[in-house]
Length: 98
Image (cartoon, rainbow, N blue to C red):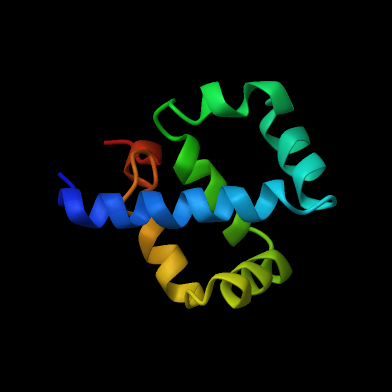
């Protein structure tokens, strides 16, 4: 189980990333298209397990986006990847089989 302080810090990074995405006129439509979420439903979707992990996965999946967010936020790219692993559904354990 995640340490609450670590998960809270990861959530803060993901929320910051969501704000970064929402403020970018090119990234927001791409994020919405990839996730299938309508712009009006983002606030509701943000409460779903795995949503914040999905935000960080979106950022991490495209190096120019990752580097732009890292520069804008002052957070090292590696820390963004670490944050993902502290979020619900942010690790690969749900994809492995026995």
